[in-house]
Image (cartoon, rainbow, N blue to C red; front, side, top):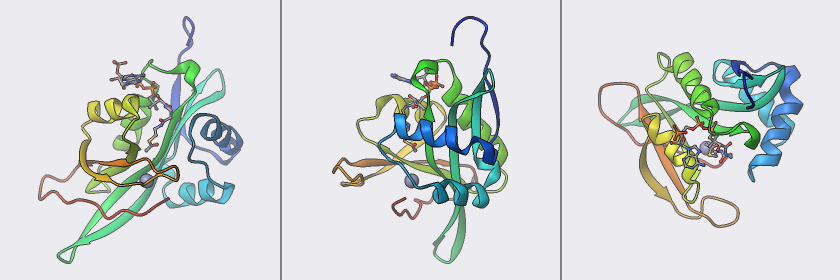
Length: 169
Ligand code: ACO
Ligand code: ZN
């Protein structure tokens, strides 16, 4: 980050859309059309955050609110669909701050958080484990190139633990 360049976390605004899409495209193989980012923002504005350094977007996290049913009990989830930090600003706590931000904003609205991550993505898996996520299952050939995913879950509610229903995004 260079000396003294602080980052801030704030909610995504539509004017950030191009910058977020650029970071998504450069740093992740999973890319989405513009309407997808807009639909996540509409679905869960409190779960769509950006990290800013000197007025520029250097990272983002976006979530979708979902429900699943277990023995007719409705379970509410925040699905962390995508997170990325510009590689020039990594290992400085930005990813941690983005995840803490969505947990703070959504923890009282959901029973748990979940995400999928490539089994080879050790930096991300380490980050999620530090944030209290656990590997709950391995999903065979989840990604387009055939790689498996880990489903990782963090429960908020103290009661029974459920494994979320998932689908491809
Ligand atoms: N190697 C090992 N552990 C790592 C690494 C690494 N390269 N990077 C982060 N970690 C772990 C460490 O435990 C670290 O804590 P420490 O620095 O005190 O040791 C902890 O994660 C927190 O690191 P942060 O600095 O908060 O994370 P960062 O800002 O670097 O962002 C991220 C992490 C988002 C995974 C970043 O590496 C990235 O953008 N990667 C490319 C995109 C990506 O893979 N996104 C996740 C895809 S899965 C999904 O989106 C649901
Ligand atoms: Zn997902």
